[in-house]
Structures are given as structure tokens and as C-alpha cells.
Length: 81
Figure 1 (tube, rainbow, N blue to C red):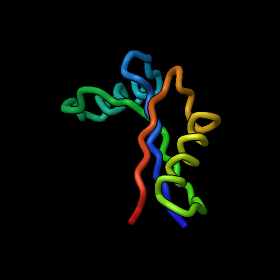
Figure 2 (cartoon, rainbow, N blue to C red):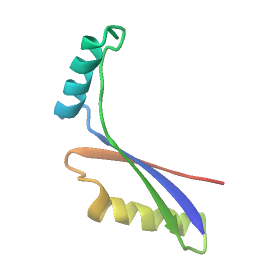
Figure 3 (cartoon, helix red, strand yellow):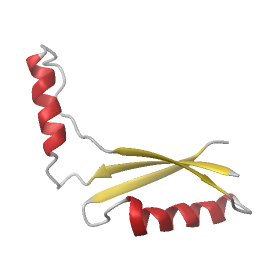
Figure 4 (cartoon, rainbow, N blue to C red):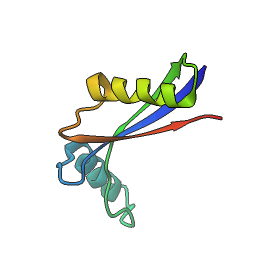
């Protein structure tokens, strides 16, 4: 069993209205040191696979087919040891 952790983030060229709203709210709270906020998704998957390579292929397929919109989002996969 492999535990995959996936971070899905908007591509830099895509506007992030949630991040913009959070940034504005942080400035209203006096946290002017925060220069930019980008909001993404964090997903954990338990994957039954014979090898880490196989688990990686399964998670990449899950991201490409459902979990991430590859037109607008990037994803990064890590595994717990």
C-alpha cells in the first residue's frame, strides 16, 4: 500500500480569485508582509500497487482524468515512505 500526497495548484498564468480574496483579507488584518496568495488543493490517496512506479502511474492517471484540470492546473505527487 502506498500513500500518495498530491498538491494541485493553478498554473501561474491563471488568475486566482480565491487567492486574491484571501490576500485582500490578510491585508485587512494587518498582515501586509504577505505579498501574494495562491490557493490549491491537497489530496491524499491510498493506492494498492506492486511497486512505487506502478502507484505513480495510477495516481498520475487519477490526476489527469479527474483530480486536476490540466488546462489550468499543475499537480505534484509525493509518497510517504
